Image (cartoon, rainbow, N blue to C red; front, side, top):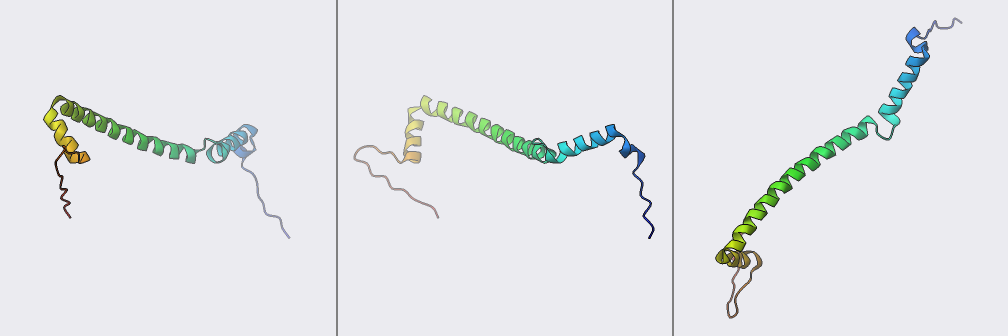
Length: 99
């Protein structure tokens, strides 16, 4: 029986290249901050930045609405009646729900 003629390439016999390859494999797959984790964190960061931009726009909208409501008593009363179903004494409120 003849043994196969298998030789290790010369660059893999170099201890520095072998150490660098082991280090690279460790970083890519086994480290706490591996590539998969970094990719997931990047996606989460992108989502959170989108949410932040959305809520910043909403905060500006609410702020302008609040300024408009508190500057005009009629608008404030209309808002309270429509949103919170508030009413004056001796007054009946009928809510019409569209289906």
